Length: 202
Image (cartoon, rainbow, N blue to C red; front, side, top):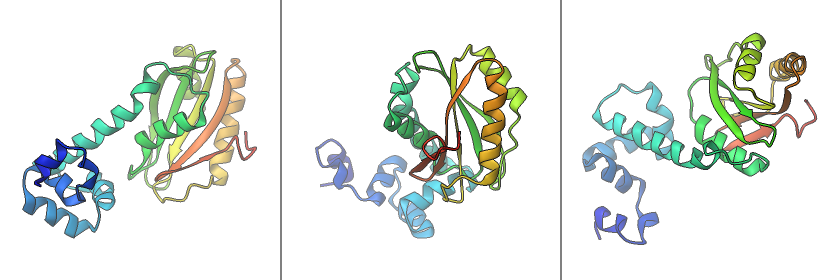
């Protein structure tokens, strides 16, 4: 059975990484070469932001963005974020495999429904400068009742640093002045998420 025949059958999960890439790109040689260079599909996807743009990498990046938007759709439609599992899946879909740190805010209404999701600050692989005044300004602009912060650790180490703890407390105190609660600060490292709230750090 060819890859195209498998994709039309219940055997889609039986496709190898190389066959999936072949379907996306249409060139067996390109897909095999990419896997050989990077060693795995996961490593290839992680390398996309640093890889020179061409037709092949553009297709892969587009497929990845389609997947991110698909997994984010339910949350972005105004679903409640009372479930830690839903929040985690949404954030992992948005932040994993980024080569640099991204600090994000999820703005919630009084029923914990998502009003907006924004990437506010971008940094290097070592950190991002987070400005409390800008966070407060954006929270007020969205008329948010509460916020969840999130950022990724490109290093793959999910544990919060001392700097993560300090900026969380600064943001919590700044937002408390305008009666906006900070519910959590989540750190994404690959598929893992660590909650500062669960660690008693908020």
